[in-house]
Image (tube, rainbow, N blue to C red; front, top):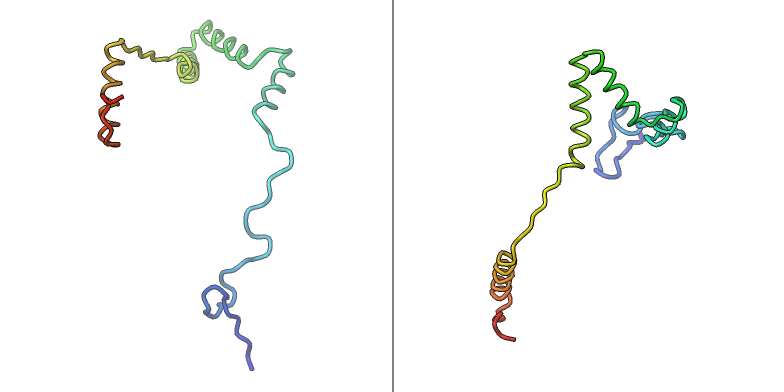
Length: 122
């Protein structure tokens, strides 16, 4: 009698040589020594006589400007603006007392409609 391999999930016969797990297939395990940005920045600081990455970035930017390298200067401008402007751009919204009172009244009316409680009743 010939033995047929049956797939436990589907109940159908397994095809020979196709599909299924194979030895040494799949994603390999990651390395034990992963590189982190903190390690890279510290190593850069160690190799550059204690200069920070930000300090070196500014020096390189100024060097590009002093050498009249317009393309490189523009790249530095874009880099710096993209990274720095997010933290500098702040929008402050202030409401007058009339606006706050109007919002409170509108909220009280909406809440009253939802709950069926009259906001004027105390």
